[in-house]
Image (cartoon, rainbow, N blue to C red; front, side, top):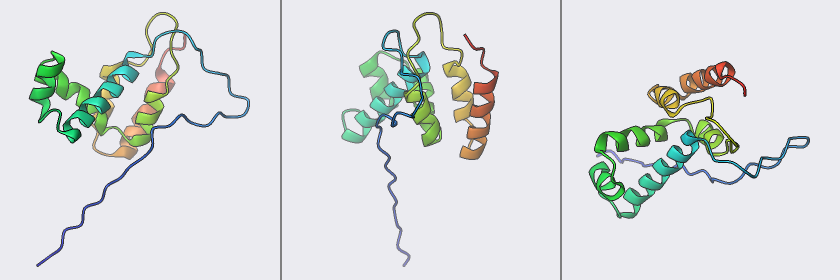
Length: 131
């Protein structure tokens, strides 16, 4: 008989320490949509873990979203943890849209390898228009 071992990986979602010489984050504005959607995915995942919802269909009913949209939102949880942290701490924007879209980030989340995800994330950031 073989024993199965489960491993649980946890990482804290804390503010990164201030880097010497770094500019302070703007206090006004709205968080980028991709940041808000990732936070929503984490919240939905927590609801399932706590038993407040059984599955994506329950989440959809509770949030008035279709199951397909819930699946799109939850896809962001497939991102490498360091990419998720970076997305969660994007600075607020005072006007307009953030140059990196949720759709572009979801395409990265579709990649199975975290190394590939990191490579594409770096490329996406480098090619994003600066405003």
